Amino acid sequence: MEVTEKEKDPFVTPYLEVVLPAGISDTVEIKRDDPENSVWVPEDVPGLLGAAYDFSAEEEIKEAEIAFKFDRKFLDNENFNPQIYYIDTEKQEMYPLEDQEVDLDNCVVKARTAHFSKYALIDTYLWDQAWKDDIIAGEQDKLNARIDVAFVLDESGSMASNDRRNVRVQVSKNFIDILRNEEKVHDRGAVIGFASSARLLSPFTNDHEALKKALDNIRASGGTSLSSGISLALGQFPLPSVDLPDTDDNYETSMKIIVMLTDGAGSYSDTYTQNAIEKGVKIYTVGLGSSYDRTLLQKIAEQTGAQSYHAENADDLIGEFEKLMRESVDIVTDSDGDGLSDYHEERIRLFNGLTIQLDPNDPDCDGDGLKDGEEIVQATDMWGRVFFRMKSHPNMTDSDGD
Image 1 (cartoon, rainbow, N blue to C red):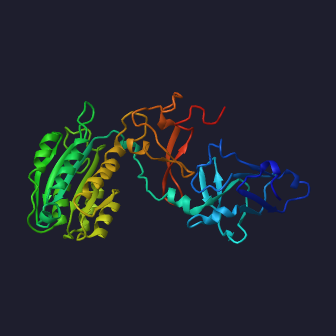
Image 2: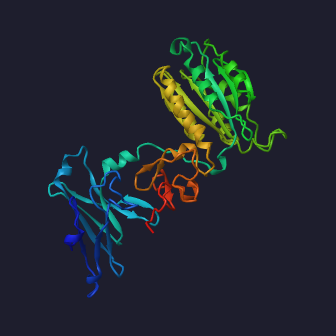
Image 3: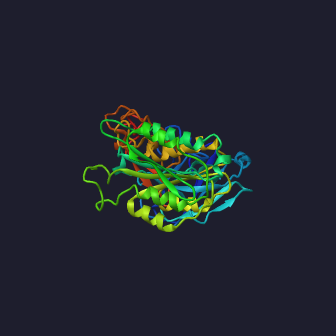
């Protein structure tokens, strides 16, 4: 079965083979989706080769073969890999059908399916590029929570040559500059230096200027004991509901993080990772140069729910710390009170691979009377990737055209 002339697309043509009971075949329809006006599969969907099509029939089918013939011009695309994608606009899911037959010589892709729905031909290479950057999952109960961050900085002798201008100190001060000290939120910091052993340069305080002065005492001498630095840092975080000070009502809901920076492969015990997990502390790790244990730092960060960063040289610490700040501070900051973190408002990825941006200082970007956080909700797909399901489009006053 082919589409009618009216439903044809200039770049892709769908075909259908299906066996139906007598009299039912007349009810089979293949309708073209208009990519210029489609909310779900617009023309800028990554890798979309032409219009999506709705396949339908009045009765259930057992099996059908769907085929798409595509324009030969697409063969010139780098790493071209066409696949038929199933699109469920109700659940907001989009994924390739299994066991596809790709015939590049004849420009045809075929696949079998047990149900009719919306399908589109997608260049998987371009689709995968749109999903290559991880988006960190947010925690709703942490929005606008206080941040308690312990800076754990390497003071070993190698830092004298690897960070001659004390860039690690300056980027830590930059981090402190974005901490909040407002009427409702008083972010706190602590400073620890470590080499063969660790020393507490400042306990937790919301005096941000005092924290910066403490950072000026970072030096470079001795060996590298990662355990000593992490151990001393974890000691600054009490166990919730056990040795929590009665005067600290915000501790249990606070965002508890350690930022550890090192250039060496020092000793470390996994006991401290487990201790961090028990205390709800995320350990963000930053490796400088090429002599540190990259695998270990990634493991520590991953197991505690944090991220790991790599700086080839001291100057690269500036960019890596900017990413770290976005992914640790912005993810718990909701400047406009719309229920979305500032971090996510700048990277709202939808199920169709498109990314939209919202204004973190405007709670209702489309002016429809609904807060942005009421229009979209965080979700995770079958591959564990974070995206957002739309109840309505947060950048469109009338997203369904009614």
